[in-house]
Length: 297
Ligand SMILES: [Zn+2]
Image (cartoon, protein in one colour):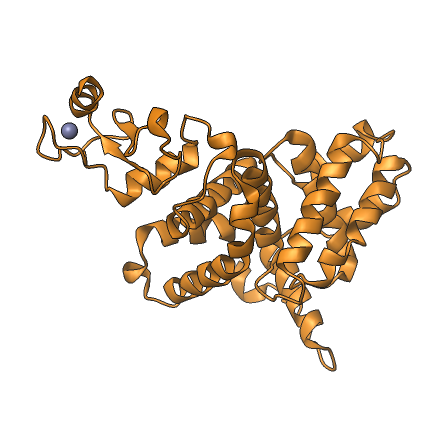
């Protein structure tokens, strides 16, 4: 009865353009009220002014979404929040509201502010033209990924490949998305879940960033760590472990035993002390017995 008598409000959109339809779709799908950004734009303080500047950065000319209801301002605020936190963090409306208030006297020449503009400048070089694949969640993931590449890897080496890699990444994602549910590769099913809801949570952002960066390092395994530091990064280890499927590659003491994530060594193929690079290419999975035997020899 309740169902049958429930009055449904139906709004038919006529005479509207593609962007307005998308906008409506996004708002219904995300369940996020973009009005929150409109309210924030009315906040007093220097954080608001700085985010206005960021939203006007030319990179936002390349993104795949319009500035309807200040979506560029919203994403700009999210990027600033990520920079201040030094990596993935919650960037929901409540978090952004808090940031506008606690950083009301934000110094637009501080190191965080400069880092945001620097990273956007780099993204702008990578994506000089309109790129529909640059959805809201992808801009956030890419921002984190580029920041990570800048901090931990030889960025000049990675830079020329990011555009092609990203377009490939997105086409693989679409390919998987169009497959029947039971034929989607498990890792892509996981990724799909992370981009479907709670995309503004720290957990989702970190997962996406690591997933994308691992995919990048698998595609460009010669990407070196900054100053060729000896220890492998977490994401390099993820890429190596996945490529070797967890099996010891040394086979000195074992027969290629399958190891668990908690119990394996990421071994430089050409030893670091002999000038071996800290790259995915120069690393493989080793069990402790084999690793010890190799060290002794
Ligand atoms: Zn072994």
